[in-house]
Length: 59
Image 1 (cartoon, one colour):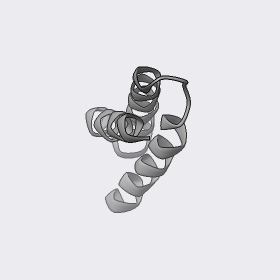
Image 2: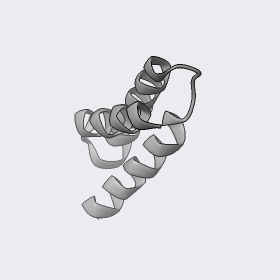
Image 3: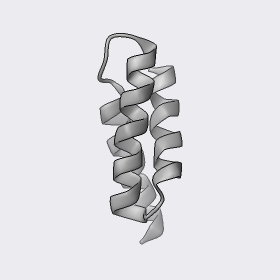
Image 4: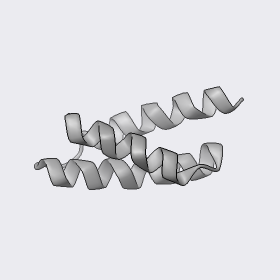
């Protein structure tokens, strides 16, 4: 179940990280969305924020 949750966090962060016009906006949006998804799905907001922010940085 935890692996499914992390896959869902990764997918949600990937979708949210594409929002924004600048790299900074994408990082912040990805981190916020990832933290929310990480908290709801896997009770791990910091991991979700790291994944979302990282995806926002490279997109």
